[in-house]
Image (cartoon, rainbow, N blue to C red):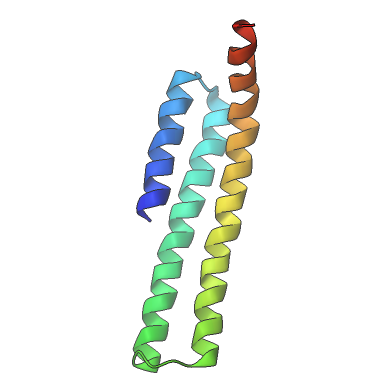
Length: 99
């Protein structure tokens, strides 16, 4: 969660620096909140599994935890793609101004 929060703060700072328009902000904020929501659901799933299994290993518990973590990973990949679509053209334009 801390890494995602740090990435979100960096993305917001870059959003201000690159002066995102309204629709770009909507995509950025949606991606950030989706990742945070999935991180929360992942934590809930892990805690419930631990509670039910009494912290003992069970193959199905591992699968449940892995699936919750996979959902976070997929959402993070989506957020990364949104970030690339929003920021890469702006970074390329900035670099091209110097050449």
